[in-house]
Length: 202
Image 1: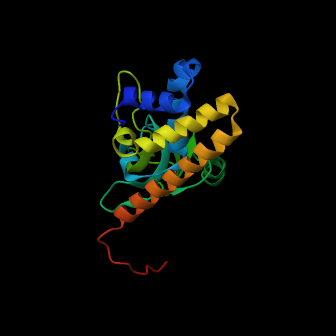
Image 2: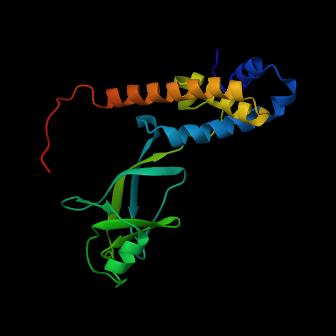
């Protein structure tokens, strides 16, 4: 049974039957985590965002993966629409306070806006982030508690890449893809459970 980081490593080692790969298992797990965070967007990965705009920008939070939505806080929320940085600079070349932003773009580790925001505005929203990485000091996270089989098969897929075992890779990767789809489908279903389907104009 996989209950923590140590037992995950044991489960992977048992399946591999390769003593020479033991030292690499933490690497396989880390690579597996990265793959998983590229493949799924679930509620457990959601985090709230709130930051005051300073000098026309806000910083992107640690562990950031993807925005779910962003808006400018105020008496009425102003939803922000994403554009490229080039588009922002082309359409809003004046980089001095002009009002409440409508658009945003990523520029390095920050977000810029168009129009250029006035002082005192706060950007809020929801984003997807990486879960705390598994390690000897952080022995569990949502994946360990709710999807240990996904972690195991994703790590075994990475091991198969390392050993250049095409048959094992096909087997483990297929199982990983299947588990990703199942977890995403289950989370999507739960997110809309209890709601009434309706048609929204627009």
